[in-house]
Image 1: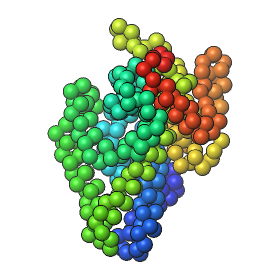
Image 2 (image 1 turned 180 degrees about the vertical axis):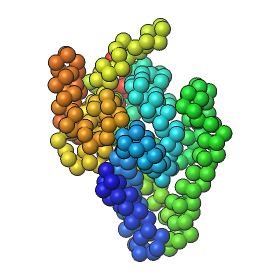
Image 3 (image 1 turned 90 degrees about the horizontal axis):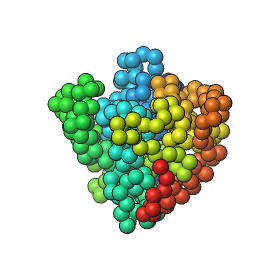
Image 4 (image 1 turned 180 degrees about the horizontal axis):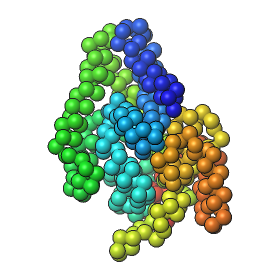
Length: 327
């Protein structure tokens, strides 16, 4: 994990340094550098920030805490991310109205229980573009809206988050982020300001697109379920079995993909053992699969990444129809 972190963080920093020091001057090479930063930004999120904020990067809590702050380097908030991802998504996976990962707003329908709009008939076409906007929400309004929503839900109190102090930190972190990745490039790179802004946008579009096509095929698939709680708010299955019904693995034998996405192609293992470092997921998968089969439980897995993407596209098309897909 140390060397992986070093490689990814260095790969993120080198293009930035080459850009602001004037080593790269060709406009197309500049664009390539920014886009490469977008790709490494995703890798940092997958492999470093994700494990750290789950408490899985290290056995040392302090190391986890500070490595979790890496999300601020890509414009996000570790506090909000922990509530959204660790608390809501991992506890209520694919549960409509609770799991924010399947609630992108009215522009897309990622659950058969969500309200249908006519535009959803084309979401299998335009949805990929919307994925590319994911990190733009991080660096603009999403963190602030989430913080106030979580306060209203009582989640900030439950997680011992001081809302006033967190709001201050959010504002300061955004100022620092925009200073480093937009203001300094505007002041130092010998190119028209609009080109630099376009390149900054391209970086985030690459990062958002990659994040979207890795996270969404893990849950929005024809094979996964969307359970609803009963009148008392209880789900049919216990937590572990619920994860098996709502989660999908893909491309288990692609070593580079596994390295780059921080083991998130083994989503089943990640959801069952979120506090275990992702470097162990591949070996864990054989045990989990055997145990699931032994108890007659599903173990959803697609052989390749492209097969998972294809099925996710098919699911987007199905969910775009007004008829209910499946419970």
